[in-house]
Length: 484
Image (cartoon, rainbow, N blue to C red; front, side):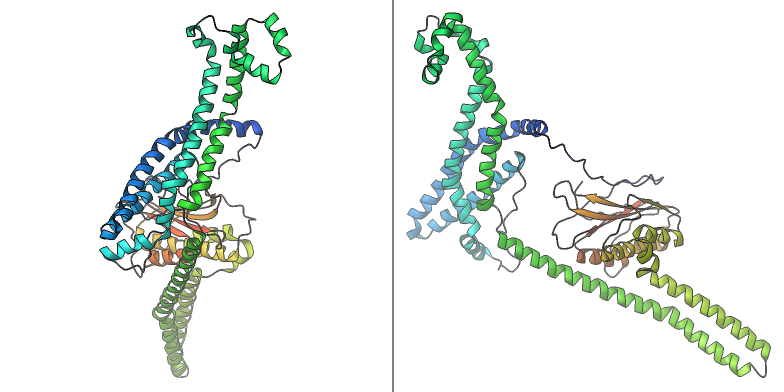
């Protein structure tokens, strides 16, 4: 069973070393490299801009037809359905426009909230929700007026710029099919120079044939327009994005509402995970050390009664009580592994994870990309230690594995730049692990969700099992685990 957000890397039966994505190499920031990146975006931006006007015209015709029909028949009541159809069509075209902008290389536009969890269900409630949602009316305005006008302007500029660029650089190829015997006013270079620098014409006419002068001028003009084409396509695409983002995307108030909802859900998950952990700790203490302490107390009481009459029996009871105390101490040490041990506080997370591997009953190979001197926030280190301890405990108790790998690293989301601490445990056990309610993996999921993180589990029947935990390094920054 695999849970989102991130499919864990497949592991072989021989437990090849676990690999995690590495941060992307920083791109060079020179002007030449920026210009090259802009050229790589030109095909997608041209595709977006050249299709803008046809799509805008179709959108305009469809939405205006539906909306005008609805307004003209509003007195007959069924006109409301035409208005709602126009709003729904505007939403569809707006969503398509946002997808086209993403395809053109623009950052994704956050989608608006069309429904809320507390909205009433039913046909009439759905219709009322469409009419009362401001996003629908903004999409309608975008489709009926704004996008129609902007798309026509940007399409004209794009076609003009591209035509001049291609016609200029290929002028030498198609000039032979132009009619001969043209007059002075038929040469473009004479018209331009006559208005800009007329004193150059006499000397130019005396030294260069009109056809050669026209070819040189056309090629230079085409090269200039072609060299500036990336700036034009990028600027026009950016114009569409700047207009679409506030009109088609989510509002800032919706971000705040979602953030409040996420924080409330995270707080509830933390409280539930802590309550579950305390209950399990209480049960483990009651079933283990407490029973041993009661037994040790009874043995010591019996030894005290026999100390005068039967020293040998008393000595045997005392020896048994000492064994009980040692077993109790081992159980208490095992239970305390879920808390932050001194080695974690003194030597950091890398040493703490190494100590967990050393005490595991299943052989664990440690692989880390963390600097031993790296100082992470204490809350992050404790959470990572607890997650690793719980995952290794599950491997020892339930997997039937004979080998496992514990890997830790800091990964960077290439789209947002957010940093995540990842802890991955891979074992060659029987597989089939499922985060069941009330069990350790489900508790880990709740605990990580409370930290704004997540747990990814890939455990097919027959193994191997790969469990990968994502812990954000900054809790205040909303985000989702990286998708690689």
